[in-house]
Length: 409
Ligand SMILES: Nc1nc2c(c(=O)[nH]1)N[C@H]1C(S)=C(S)[C@@H](COP(=O)(O)O)O[C@H]1N2
Ligand SMILES: [Mo]
Image 1 (tube, rainbow, N blue to C red):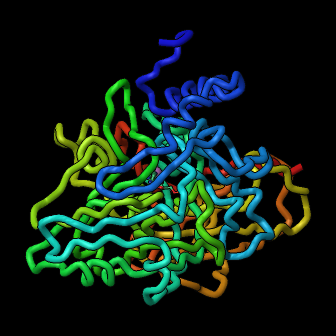
Image 2 (image 1 turned 60 degrees about the vertical axis):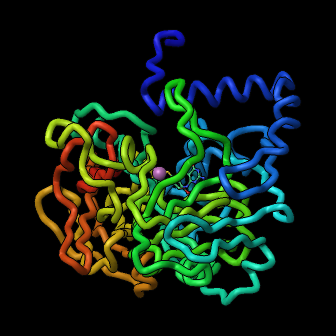
């Protein structure tokens, strides 16, 4: 315990560690570790990586981001007026450890294991020479919305206290994972793919859990997963996986491994802490080993408004927002300003089914007072946001309708 803080709480731990990290780099004590980290080698794959000055490389102006140690949340009020895609410099960051600076010229991706006949190793130029494809897709942290378990439902959960900004949508460009797997001679009995990152090992409560890595099924890998090297027309920024990351559409963000260095393909199920200890539901209503590993993300909605925004009484206000679902397109969005009656929001043109849906709602001449605005979306499969999210101790997948406070004055 540091000064009464509970370091077993992931959010507290990350804040404390980031503070210590910042202090060390201010005092110039990381010079030695920069040199030793320069020859960092990943399991299987190789790349040289250096450590940046802090856990996140890009600037995090407070008007765009809420900083949480190694993570940074996009502020929804800063999104108003931006286009459909989240600009790279505005995209949320979720780092288990810290952004590595990877030398693209030395980067290699290895594909190996019992599920491929001809193990493959390729560099960035070779990857870029393969047929490229673009995909507009969201990436959303499994814990997005976590703080509402506490603020809205009075429940205790651990992890970063995100509001709704641990999500973003980009146009990704890269090579289909299926292309690489087939080139490596994917066998008929292959079942799992385990991508590993090149960031430093993740130390959780003093235990080294190794490289950030999380298995996904071959089925999903062949369906729509992209091995991406571009984000919104630019090379991936360091914080978002430079030079190469996975993009696993619709699935929990932790599946979209950044700084990809290694792909193990196996003819038997693979496990890592990221599909056994984390990214499952744990708690009262779940078995001791937790739910099945989480995959598809749930339905959520956000207003493009500051928290506790002040609006002008008697003036018609056009409220803007976005809704999204890992399962597919959004079919309907309803808004309530009084918590009792619901009206349809107007949907804008729909883009990719793997991305969000923009909408607007005309709030006619609101009277002065305090309100809780609600947006409730339904996706094309009939998944609808409930009033309450079932509790789980790690605070994953908060999908209930969020009550967004505003004051009309
Ligand atoms: N190698 C590696 N990949 C990773 C992570 C990480 O810490 N290391 N974090 C994961 C999690 S939990 C999420 S939500 C997304 C976040 O992607 P972003 O930082 O580009 O927004 O990356 C995933 N990929
Ligand atoms: Mo995440």
